[in-house]
Figure 1 (tube, rainbow, N blue to C red):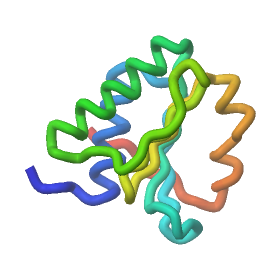
Figure 2 (figure 1 turned 90 degrees about the horizontal axis):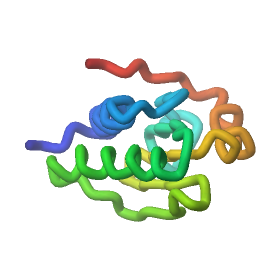
Figure 3 (figure 1 turned 180 degrees about the horizontal axis):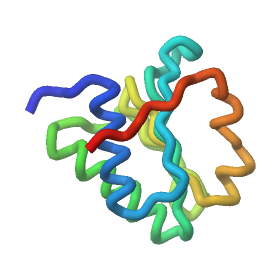
Length: 117
């Protein structure tokens, strides 16, 4: 399957995370406020195993279309995992860690993207 572009990748990753009951998921279109990436997907997990399940689901979903992260950082045990897909940065946090970093506040000027499907 052809690559869907940043928005499509973000949508697929979001659906995979939601299928695993990710909490407080948001996708931000940061194209106008960041030179790093086009989209941020930020979501939370309720425990270390839950965080691992969400990350694994996103990786599996995108890998099915040959989309692999350029870089990954963090471990579920640390409370935060980053998957860098180039045009999409996926941040999966434990709830306390997410509150500490407050990425949505940092990128507050970026519009939210509705999750389709």
